[in-house]
Length: 201
Image 1 (spheres, helix red, strand yellow):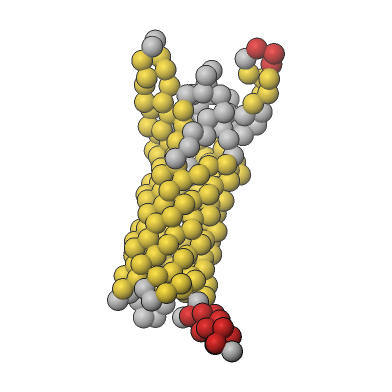
Image 2 (tube, rainbow, N blue to C red):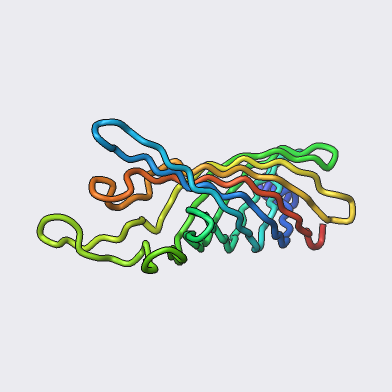
């Protein structure tokens, strides 16, 4: 009987609400490559946007976990005439501390690339399309589709359930598939701002 009471109390404490969010972001694509024995760095930046849904699962007083599924546009500009348009599905899972409407959190970010195409100068390329590389004509794409990152977020939720937040997401792995004969090591980074609404809270 005691176990049943404790179990019911735990379920009651773990309140779950759902919401939507959208926002804009500054994207950064960092390429590190070796040239004449020295490592060079090339930073490519551009604006993008994200939109999707999220859930907020209460774990304890002031503590919750907030997973989200976001459609993410990670456009970056090479020059005034050339850019790479990257589209991805991102799944950030943030562990939040809340107090008085404010919240601060961090957690992992899982990203799956849908499209990565260059436009502008020269022939358009699909960076997820495989093509022969190196000896034996082994086929590889320029980028890996899966990327793991770390996410930091903070914001405020108003009493009318509207929330605003900022986030910083840093890719922690190399997503280059051909670093030995291509653009070297590639990582992504994003700084964004969002507005959202939580239902039934």
